[in-house]
Image (cartoon, rainbow, N blue to C red; front, top):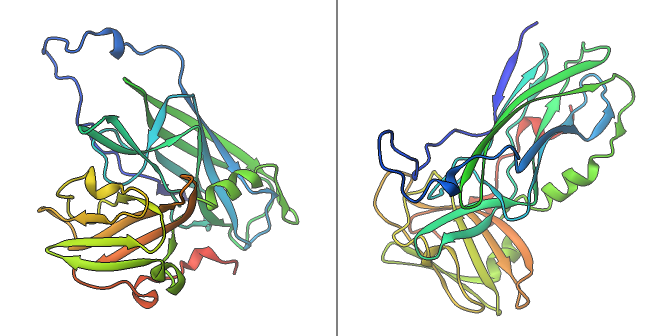
Length: 297
């Protein structure tokens, strides 16, 4: 059987690891790993049965203990995102993994800033069976992750799910996928653009809401480092968010996730930003290309 592999994330080295031979600092107690995993992974599908050639959604749901978190795949000061490798039968194809928007998280105020997942998150991708597929199929995946509180604990699991062939029927996991899709950033459209005043000034993108909205920005790994990660990633209601670019590798411009909150601090919109240096956002320039795997054949 031919096996195709798809990787959900790139392992990134931790920036705050222990060094061999160094004196323990801080004391070892917070670093001791216990036997409780604090995060559990499950392989799920949005169908009970699959039809040859018809696309369905496959996902990995992480259930995370209270006060613990996993990491998003963008720019973080510490940790690395989950990585998932899926084994596919011959002739099956899989699209890109979709990552719900993260939560901005200051582990140490003014010192460590990460973008994280809490409580529960589902990473998902579209899978298309081969047109010649028949009978029940066993899908397998291996997952690795880092779950953190004050200390971090690596986790891993071998996951599997069997899906019989038959007329496609929704599974009991549809709610998980709906929850995840609600947090997927969408491209800017004309209405979204009109909610803000956009201005470039001295290498910084200034985003000013026309109403009393507050903003958070999660930078992707594709853009240069921010000059001030703390001030450039959050604004107070009605105030301007100034995304100040620093020096370093990356495509000049702003790339990442912009989340909008109302006066009650409730999330009202999540946008994907991909704005070249000096350019103004427009629906045409920010529209994402449709993935060939995003629709049924």
